Length: 165
Image 1 (cartoon, rainbow, N blue to C red):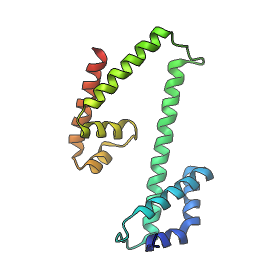
Image 2 (cartoon, one colour):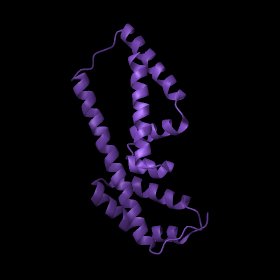
Image 3 (tube, one colour):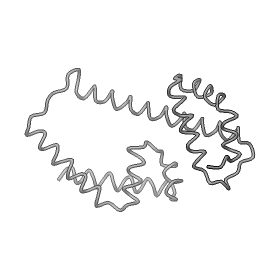
Image 4 (cartoon, one colour):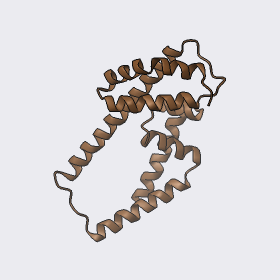
């Protein structure tokens, strides 16, 4: 692998980036992980990719990674809280009949997801599993935010109809 100017800028600013991430994330371990992720992303850029100010670009990338990381952590905390509320202090053990019903419902929803057009399935995945905003998804798939909203609405309506049948 060839050292590009951006890789060189990363190596020169690595400790500053890590300190920056530690302050943002309040965790040295998470900061190290995100710094490594940042390095891998920089290494994955096309060699012809050029920026005027490598340091500023790297800090912007680090900031975006930190924001995404904090959003994921917040979403995971929400899900844990929901599960705690739903199940209470002690989770009830499902009866064999309940487990079978749940498994069948999950299989129906998986089949329904497989029947969706690939673009709609991707938009739904980015929204629900990667917690991307409609604007972020629109940029990734090349649609307007309104079109992304319409795809999501159709998928959710379709899955709800499948669930309710």
